[in-house]
Image (cartoon, rainbow, N blue to C red; front, side, top):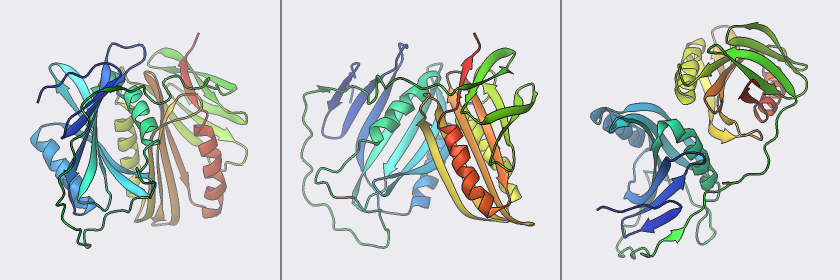
Amino acid sequence: MDETVTKGKVKKDNTRTLFSIPVQNSSNKGELQVVRTEYHASIDLWQTIQVRENELEKRTLVRQWDQDIMGVPMLFSRTDYTEHGTAMSSILGLFYTRTSYKLLLRLTAPTADFDKVAYEFNSMLETLRTVDGKLPKEDDPSIDLEPVTKKTPQAPLPPHSLEPVNKHPKSLAKAPVAIETVVSTKKVILRVPEGWSAVGAKENMLELKSDGLNVPLHIQLYSTLDSDLPDVALIKLSANDLPLFSKVSSREDTSQKANSAGTSISTVWRVGQADSGYLVTGEASAAMGQYYLLLTYKQTSGIAYKTERKLIEALLSQVSIEPAP
């Protein structure tokens, strides 16, 4: 079915809803497709299906993760591909509720503007609520669901306007400490909160220190013009640290959350055991415009980790990168 999606509009039919997401200061736009799909099996099977489908379509699977929405995981897969000569990116998300039909979201946009579109998308997800106000339950494949016998009513046809959430956010706050460094021969300013300082700066690398932090944070700075995209770089960085563990007891991921400075933050935290004993690793990306940083943290003390993680999260809540004047 052909359908024209106009800027700032949403159109519906009885099978899907299409949202057009404008991109500030760009002629490009993102598209969010909302459909319902019948699925009642395991999370692992769903993610495996996505891997196989992307292999068949010859698309690059960048990352798979889940995100808690109202106590239920949303199962995400990010892919990159080329369409009519344009680099494109897409996120597919399945809302893993205990229902025969599940909400399926597909976000698509040119890769050059995908971080901006993904930010709007994540802001929209924060507003997701059930119609009756009851919290949904996570699916369990071992539980038999009642078959759907009622005909699903047709969605209303007339379009209505959709303005992206936080299209005009409150004023962005810049961290007070400015550190000048170089990324791809260009001078940039790394901004961090009070109490943080940089040491050992060399080319695109430096270490950040703060009172209360027993180990330095290793920082690498890059430009998307000549390096991987932030999500891809974070995946590679995290994969490099995985062999340090003999056993991983927990892993926490966050993806593309905007901080107070407008920087897109993604993190990976692992807790487990190395051959030598207790080990925690933290990796993060902080992206703003064409520039981003990768952060690496390692700690062998569980007591120190509890306080140091708060310090690192406070840093990530304010950090930003901007071109030097």
